[in-house]
Image (cartoon, rainbow, N blue to C red):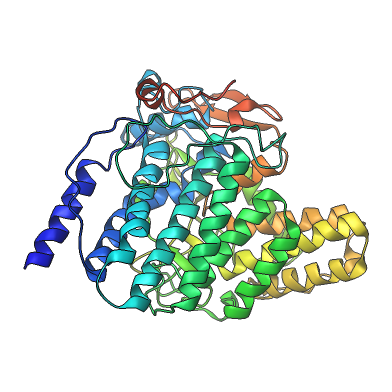
Length: 502
């Protein structure tokens, strides 16, 4: 009973001072749990994000990208449309009350969860209990902290490969759990990436040395190494992409063959379904109520024609891609159906949402999986081929891409050969298209990829509900709005922070 009381007091302490350290610091009596079991509950409740927050960590930036378009909607859907509109239009006060909807979540939630990670890292070594489990918990906390900083720096900073990462502003690094009067300043992009690398390596090593069999919503060594691969892709460190992708794929090489899965509406298996976790390295729950789904009436934001065209390219050649056959709602990552047109009242067939696991409950529509490792490794080989002209690199890239595609097409599929491409750039472009198809709608990949791939121009058309006419908004090439604004209230409470310049 005493241990339980200490645990409850410890959770109360976290909740009281769990608010963003960069909003306001309040000192509280620090009462801490005493056992590994207590610390595991804190890890699960305070370091791991919850189901509602999972949408942001997987799909939160898609509305900023070229994967999403805007639609005219009925009044009952308009509130959601207005909430997301400032992001769709890349407004500089998108998180502030001045735009109509104050939202601190992109900044506040990761730092709240980092606080939980710091608590586990700092105090778990002192807990009584199973040593293997204790070390694994610490490893999970390190990996989670690296994951949250990777999200923050990709949202609020310039990409690593743009300008000088040693001078470009990153995000503040808070690496201790205690309350402090310090007003944290922004570390450089390079410093943040160095910390992410340290955290993910430390987490992976601890979990690899202290193996535990947890459900796949909990991190493990393979997932931590996979997150490291993702980080090296953002950095353009292709040698390390190859090194650690090889390591992950040695640990878990299998892909889910979509050709072999059932295709009835409520029994189809997809890449994130819990009953068929063939390629899941880490499955993230997220709340479908917060997604861009539609049932009956048109939803304000849905997959763009440009995204659909990426899939259509193969369909036009007679290859039926299980990921993009959106007119068959039982199949495909892109889902479609008959939705009611806001103006005419008639029903039209349209692509409505990106979904990779709804057929089972619970749904894991995001996370990190084996397929990403094959794509990352293929891109690394393409980049090397582009630089050196070494044919072996091109063949290795095609080997990975063909393996993935064999598990995704169910009609008309043929392996690609090097003669199918005019040059190294053509092969890289093909690889990046495959990446967009495979990873759309998860892990904020598209927005983060657009940043590292040169921040190209994007055009969004915001549709007026009354007239069905659109106003065009342009995010220009290398536009500074590719870097999200720090919420105004955060800057007011921490005057040491510098806002991004536009």
